[in-house]
Length: 167
Ligand code: HEM
Image (cartoon, rainbow, N blue to C red; front, side):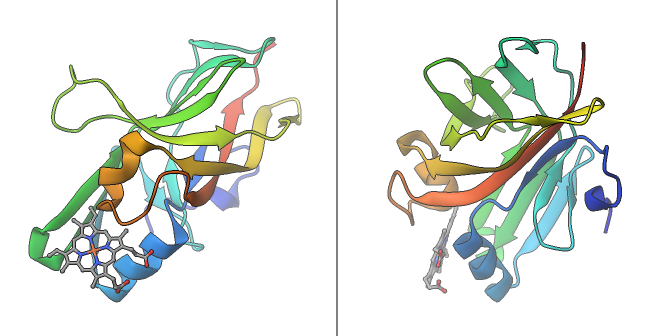
């Protein structure tokens, strides 16, 4: 296991199990999982994406963009299923919270908006700002990442985010 995020109370990053059904399916299919750029997987099968920089986040308003790095590629069905979840970002505004991933076909391509996120009130221990167990709902624009197997608004796995606190 490349990383053990739960071992440190102050470790920062994003934890996400994609979708419980998808993970069970991948396991059943003996899918190959490739982790890159610091991504990891916890003992509870959540994927871990290290936090990048939070320069585009306003710590007072709690709005802006939270950026994470790392990639998770899943490959099954002899390569016919081959999808990657790369560099997840959370764009938080007054109106919505959106989880997106990079389009791995090219850096200049727009990011893929994957899910609507329902963020709980964050907690802060003076060192780390944390949102725990935020619910996520699949967006139309993210359907293809799950092979169009789920309809829009399907509940995906919740995400937990920790970022370093800044005064
Ligand atoms: C040769 C290609 C493929 C075959 C033969 C195949 C086969 C299947 C089958 C038989 C199921 C339903 C039964 C089960 O859950 O075990 C299923 C479900 C599913 N497939 Fe595929 N699939 C293929 C490609 C893909 C691709 C390319 C993706 C994603 C990019 C994908 C994502 C899914 C998802 C998300 C489910 C639903 C899992 C759940 O929540 O139960 N599949 N697939």
